[in-house]
Image (tube, rainbow, N blue to C red; front, side):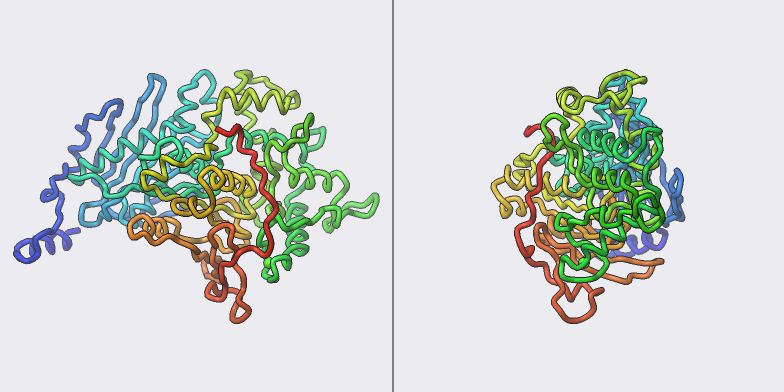
Length: 530
Ligand SMILES: [Ca+2]
């Protein structure tokens, strides 16, 4: 810092170099003075300079990261009398600022500021903003008796945070940010699509990863999946080892379907692996096979949630290859389906929908209760297919998802994109502003056997600033920190195909080509056509 300021002073004395931005020259407000800002329904708690250094975000399993110097603003937004939306804005010094604002998304229902993502964005020169979405923790009881807090979580917190962050950055730097981007995955992907659909003016560019935007039906899907995979005693029918066996068997069966044996199922919609293939011999049960109830449970997971009355699909199933491909929480059906003592997000029904803490999930009426939920809480889902306002304002949207996502089934994300394509007048017209990339073998937002590290924000920035629309985005896979494979993620519905020469671990040897035949039609289950 000291050297930078000194350099600026020296350069400022040279008349030919006319514009050396310093906070004072740019007319910005000193960090501590930002605490005195008055923005309607916003209370600024602190504004303080933070020195560069190692930083470990609060919360479990966080790793230390380097964080540049910045001005940290802590604030609370109260757009309703029941709102208590905490958010932070971190602003780089003017000479380290790239002139842009990045809003970062959240995970699950968790009320927690996304410190790690903020530190990453700050490190790239962005001013960054994040909110706790208006409550603390992952417990859904916050919605009981607090309908406005559900709205805050669902869409309002991110919007009011964005508006306030723009003003705070403007005051700190003496001018508005040139661009604003939003980046989120999972619930952050839901927030990303919500922003594009509901508040098209908030962001110039948006990255939506593995979006949990079809939130209501996903919750019904979790309930159905739990019931399908647990015995009458409430115990899970499949162990982690059995799930790993299913993934291995599915990949063995379908790896070559895409023409390349590389340990990856390129498109699970083309994989028809039946778990009955590994059925145990009658009366036996060991690590190499599935019992009949286990086969039945896996089939139901693939099949998805259907109306018992009409057979109509309520929510798509989870893909072959997503069952169990690693030991961490999101590398299989463990965390969201198998391990919970009760169906995941059952508190949606208890505290958000029925206001009955004793509601028994065995009593669910799939048709009646789904209709009720979509009528009462439709704002919780971001499934609007008409993106005209976002397109008209010049917005750019990049969406990605993992083909082995065990939390948000990729087929639902495909169905949503197909729905937008239909509503927006075709693939070409949609690609003008909204592009979609599927990552074979990637889990929920990250990890998995397939390449799963990539720079969507960089690609978005190139698109927004320079008009360079990405057709392919190179992804890498690393083992123990060492990159062992790169591969292009192709713009949907194109697929990456080996050119026939060179390493299959080098992206340069792959081309993005149309799929060999029309893919199976994706069934849209994203709620009412609103
Ligand atoms: Ca393959």
